[in-house]
Amino acid sequence: MPRPAHEHPHGHEHAPRSAPAVLRSRGRRLTPQRQLIWEILVAEADRHLSADELVLRVQERLPDVNESTIYRTLDLLVEEGLVLRTHLGADRAYYEPAHEHPHHHLVCESCGAVAHVHGQVLGDLAARVDEHAGYALGPGEITLFGLCPACRR
Picture 1: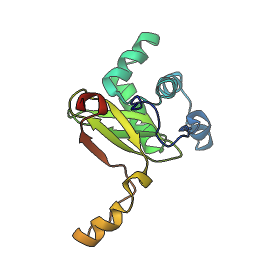
Picture 2: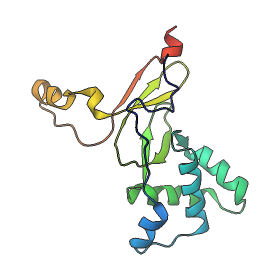
Picture 3: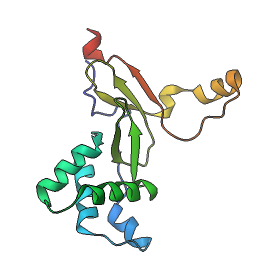
């Protein structure tokens, strides 16, 4: 039976670092907005939230926070390496906590489901790309598009 998109096929959990501790250690203030955005991302760590979804969730709890503050906070968290900004299609960026174990994304072109796979699943892809095209792949994630198990049926 196929796993739901939020489960990890490698058998271990992703543990995001503590943004409050990292921000404080780097001399950054932990504002209520930053704390709330981090809490929302960690609460749904296996989802990929768009900036629009984050704005709605933050403003449900802190109605006076304006959109530009949320976008600046997301930029700061990405800059500090605490949050990943990933483009998973539909010309929108999605956000998730950065994890100790980097992963790649599989996106269903039919239903939009997203699953994670780790580098070992892709095997020696980087070496083969280098050998055949001369490109050295960087450490960033790779996003692959196709059909999830449910949509293939």
